Amino acid sequence: MTENGFMELNDVQRLDELLSQSREQPVILFKHSDTCGISARAYREMTKLEKRVALVTVQKARALSNEIEARFALPHETPQVLVVRDGQLAWSASHFRITADAVTRAVEEAGQ
Image (cartoon, rainbow, N blue to C red; front, side, top):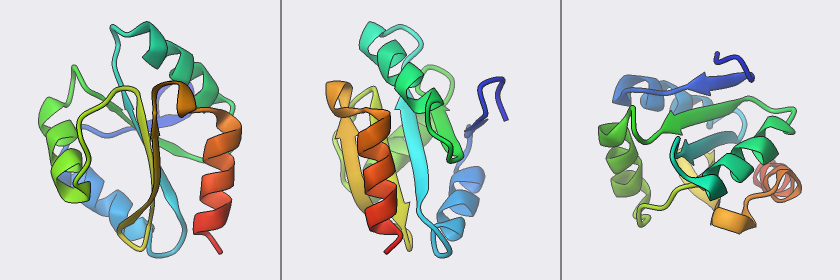
């Protein structure tokens, strides 16, 4: 876990473990850029969540970011949040659409 309660992901093995957990409950992936002001705003929003958040810092884990894009057929964007349930993309948002409330609602809906 990082200092803000995020679980940092750096490799495909950890991603696979996280996605297997999505069979029991929705999981949250947050693709973040250390150099983007919009991503910093989204990071602050994500710290408000009471759920565990898997953090992929693109500058540190570019290959993993590319793997996420390929698996879920998404274009690269940062910041970007994905809610995954049963290994499938249930919801995603990027940039200013990332709010703690929106992610909370998406997780609740995916858990039903």
